[in-house]
Length: 298
Image 1: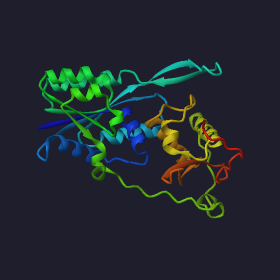
Image 2: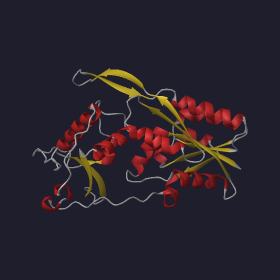
Image 3: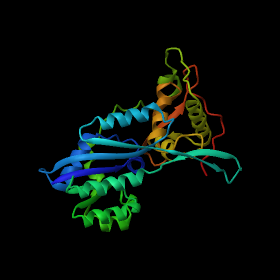
Image 4: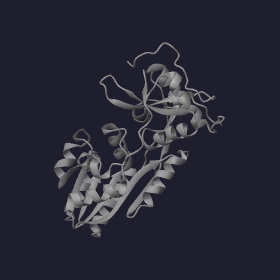
């Protein structure tokens, strides 16, 4: 059995962050695990297709991630340029600009049906729970091929999509196989001993208005929250000054850290769980002190 995998990139990343914001994935092992979950040990991996919208001014780390992905054996990345739109804030009336994906889903649908028609696969695995793909699944079924759906959580899966697919894969069941272990971030310690107070090379200011806006937004979040979870800032913090949630914003956060404008640390949330958080840094290398009055989010 030949098995192909089709990633709705933005959907996959958002769902992964909701499931476990600290989880890092080995995409080679992920493809192998999915292939065997569908067709057993004798199944043949027939390729993985990753579809994503990318802004013209996306951080270099986004392209770095995508380049690294398509250099893996059997992976093919399909980029579509995000479209810039404008809107008006209903609360204050200010105008703002944002970007949105265009043609990503239709490209995935076209390829899914095309590859089914030429028998490039016997079974396709759709990594998305969006019911917009229901007509495409029905078309592939009519061509005599199987479509499986894979999600991190049942909450991410449309019931209409599930009942039209041949089977369902719970990605969470394979974490032990494709998880990438990363060094544990330093524990939070009293200020006089914190790593942020240790001697550092002279600070080199980062260039680019995108980093400046990201730093301002991080500081705004710090003024409102007891701590700023990295996953919350990447996936849920609402701002027209930042890239869209997901891969682009994650790359911008990584650039902030790499430029010395922010750092990652670990805290416990109200339920006692370890949370990876981020905080801004002053140009002299020290952690920025809070403004005093911290308001809990409403």
